[in-house]
Image (cartoon, rainbow, N blue to C red; front, side, top):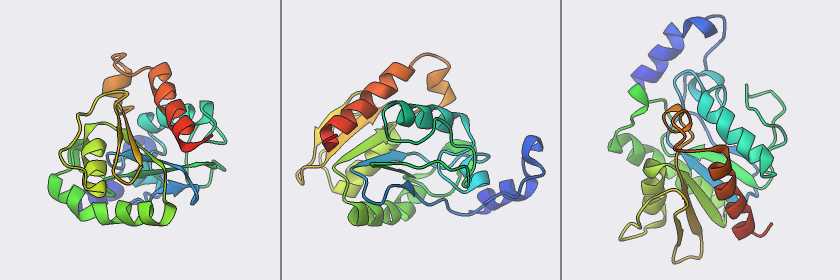
Length: 200
């Protein structure tokens, strides 16, 4: 929490004239979504700056472009909270709601934040949970009480006892997208599969 607020005060030079959000970042999207996309945590100069998850950073550029190509997003980019972007059939959130140092949240931060995701799942009632990376996969398994935890991998698919389906994909971080570990086609395939499983 202290780090999140310090980043918002000190700012990155490129954003020095902007007012940073600097608070926990809520989920965003269609309240009747059949697909719930779960990420890691807000980026220090992305969601922590803009106040909307996956907004204003490179991971978000990849994610929202794919959500647009697969019919979930009204536009291919997410720049700021008031940019007119709308999601249809999808809701995007993070397992950890505050930007962590080095983008590496502690298990205690995950556990403190999971009740927010649990409440979103309860209110929205999605059919499919798309997990962006192993951290989100682990968080989703904890949320749904899945034991033993199924193995994570890109394209992994697991049906929980309540009928909800977990889908795994590598996180759209620069570490994965710059190296080709995750391609646009790979991410589109997982989100397309989520749409299929969600019933359209």
